[in-house]
Image (cartoon, rainbow, N blue to C red; front, side):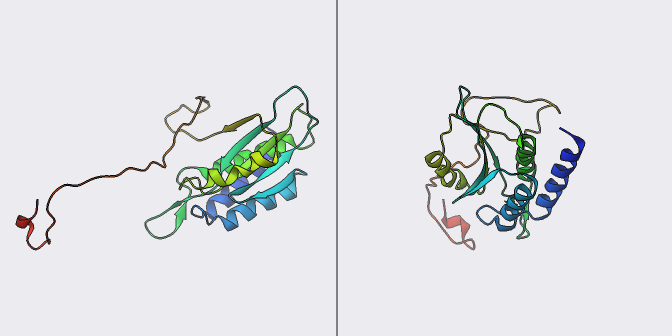
Length: 186
C-alpha cells in the first residue's frame, strides 16, 4: 500500500477510535465511514438496516464475486461510555483501505465491502443479510484481530470463529431467603 493511502487509513482509524459508539447506535461512526468513502472513492454506497456496503462492480466473469466484511461498533464501558476494545475501528479502517486500493482498478471480479454494525450484540449480522438479496455474492470473508498471533501472521479457518454472543441458562435449586437470615436458605 502506498504511504499516502496508509496515512489516510491511519488517520481514519484514529477518527473512528475517538467516536466509539455501542452496538446499534453507531450513527457518527457510520457517517464518518460513509463520508470517507464518498470523499476518497467512486464506489457505489448502499444502505442496509444493519450497516451499509460499497460496491466495486466489474462485468461478470469466471472469478467469483466476493464480499469482505468488517464491523464498526464498540463495547459499552462501565462508566457509561463506549470504547473500541476489540479493534473494530481498525477493522473498518482496514476495509476502507481495501476500498482505496480497489479505486480505479480492474481485478476481474466484483467486490462488495460490507460494513456491519452491532456485531458485539450479535444483532447486526442478520440485518446485513439484505446484501445477499440485492447482490450476487459467491463468497464472503470476514476478518478479526487475534492478539495471540505473531505480528504479520494471518490465520484462516473454515466456518464460524471467535463467536462471543452465546446464550446460556443457569438453574439454581434451593430455598431462597433474605440476606439478613442466610441460615434459612439453601
